[in-house]
Image 1 (cartoon, rainbow, N blue to C red):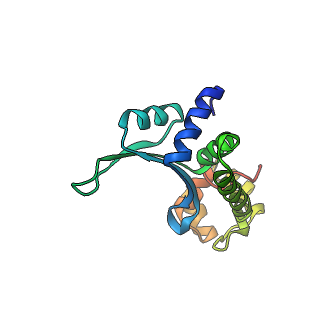
Image 2 (cartoon, rainbow, N blue to C red):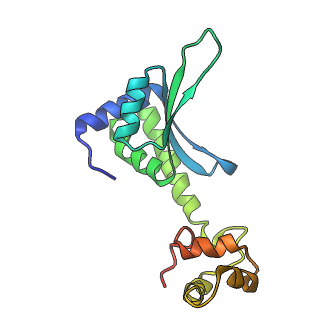
Image 3 (cartoon, helix red, strand yellow):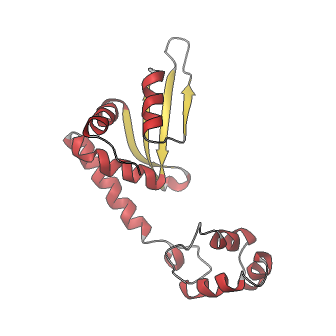
Length: 165
């Protein structure tokens, strides 16, 4: 993550204090998020650019309400943002950030074979990576009883990255 000045962090923290949200979202509420939602498009776009938001969405409400603009940060980037802005936040927001950072750390312990639906074990991963140099992901997947996508994700480092070969 880039380095930021105290002014930039304070400015962003002020926006989040008033117009932000820190939570878990996504499938099974497992992805940490930071969200900024307000009616000032230029401010939302500036924050989105400064902190590399995935996108700025337009949130149109009823005819009586102004259009809102939403910037969203998820996953590890959201956790890094939370840690960066925490010192600038009020007590209530600091407590929420502490809660989310703690829950996220606890959830990270449920990766690999500790995950409830895992069919693989850590000790298989170095062998799978070696076999990928000599055969197809589809063939390895059939042998292991998992999907081609599971093996491909191991190959590209998207999953099982905690296992060093």
